[in-house]
Length: 546
Figure 1 (spheres, rainbow, N blue to C red):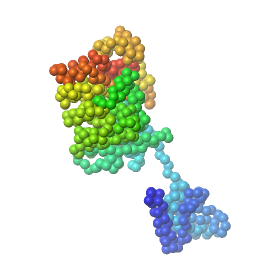
Figure 2: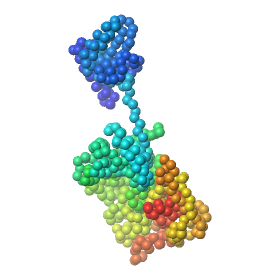
Figure 3: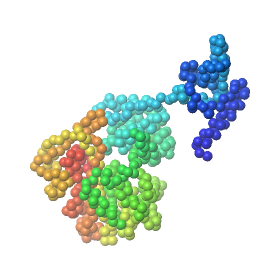
Figure 4: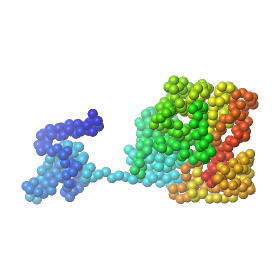
């Protein structure tokens, strides 16, 4: 029995009960189901407050012997019915009363007095020192109805493009902050009595305990309706007990499969070509490195989407699953309960996959199993903890040791960062001597023709421009809009393979990077400076992120 059938059955039972009560109370019973949504409303007999208070609805005015007809319920005061009867008789008019169910009364009352849809002001991010916006947003959040405050917060965070919501307990308030374009911004300080509402909603939706004394992890989803379209927000929830209550961080993942596309990552043609060339091979290991929030997951999922064809079997091992991709077998690995990526990988290899994605290589067992899979006919994608490609390669050698068999398995290591992109209000300026020296020092060793090709114009080391962020009005309080991907790609060639084969005894990050740069690799910092010279971001942003 579906929900509609259940509701119909409940209404039928209520009508039968009302029919029996009408006999007891001495009123004629009326079943309104056939006309309650279509009969014209009588609006000039009683005001809405009277109808609400006395549970009485006028349905007919004048006509024939009976001039007035009213619907009443078992909650209608008998004194009201008696008083109305006497008043109408005193004017030589007659009124009749019919008993209806409470559901019938609710339908009529909703037609007479439909709920007013409340529209709250959109949340705005306050600029530095902008206390007025902070106070205004705090007032808005404190005014939102208790049943809507949590959904309102999620919808506003999505509208702002926030990647995280931080709910933090202070001594006398709850602080709400949101991370937008990688920067954490204060949004509001709300009353402490809203803490119970927020925590209750958060806990029930993500299956967490409100009384926990240890950190918890959960997951939830929310459908966002905006401008006639719908998308699903995947939300990873982390809570931790603090002095004044449980603090929570909600990581928001805007699920839209169509956006998981290599062409939408903002990469250069050379970067795209290198990625496509590597993943076009049926075997090998591709590692993605970078800190939390650097876009690793989006790049890995975009690679999976590019590989997701009907002639390939793709399996992922994830902790937790952040995006669901049609046609890909995704397996959750709960490391908090003793699961391991290594054990999971050994199990799925029996299913004969063509491509395997491992959420993260965290230990030697997983690393060796992944490499073993990559040399036995599988393409393996994974993330890894390191800051640069050279550091990742060095650390991988520390995990698995030098081994000639493994030397051809690792095909590419990618390091990635996200920097804030300058908005249209940016301003060009002449760099000072210190900035000039810094730019030229970072680009030192990079061939002039490579620099000019990356920039898209002829680079003049004696005279070049940089750009600064300038706030562009209400929708652009910081002079930045969105983020750009800065990617360092180490293609593992014969010279790099020597390190993992053991041909070179002195294995260190600096030497690996020098070797890769000699083979044409452009470092993260160099990519960042090139982006600044193109006017995509600022020197300050490169310093902050890279």
